[in-house]
Length: 275
Image 1: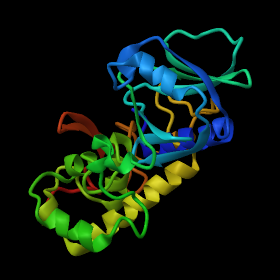
Image 2: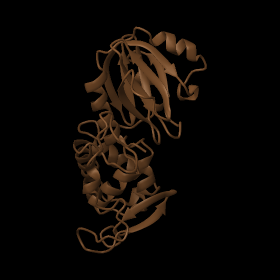
Image 3: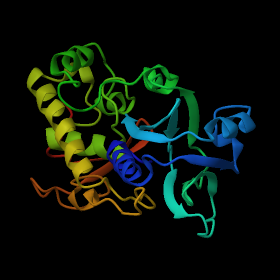
Image 4: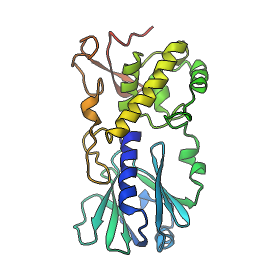
């Protein structure tokens, strides 16, 4: 699943490719992608709309149009591709935005789990999926004091808490494993048992890991590519995720993989001790 750094890379690519383009028509080959029962109205409404900006909130893309916000969530395998009108239509292409200059933005999704919703302009923060999100993992939004208070009230293991998007948004399986490794915290450590120092180190690790991943264009696992067709480069910097059996960078202990909250979880059993 594309995580925050990958979605940010897609946003950056789309910003370069489609801002200021005007929609001439829209083709919808798989209606369930669109969160409306009136697909014809969706297509007609978008005619003549221009793309003013491409924004991101958590893992949601917000395509700002002349009169509307188009919210897009890529889910497991969704991706955007930019094409000329006469390029062959690839398998798993479900939505095509035809621009008046002969170019196209195509949405492809092998599993068809991705979703799009058209809402009133500047109302993205009220969209149900976005409304419940925690702060972005950047300062000053991601406040250490608030983070510490929230963890102190929760007995749940730290990994699933970080995955649920309420404490901080944008963390998925890869980057939770990487941040916990950097902070030397066991993924099953109950949140309310973390010390003040551990929380501060974890807070910094979350910000740093995601910032480095954004700068690298994300992590390519299987099929992810950004809107420019470029693979992310952060996978070469992964310390624990996907490194089962490899020597820990710090202590040379083999990296271990377990299941935490039904998710494959990687950690160093010597550096990240449950206490």
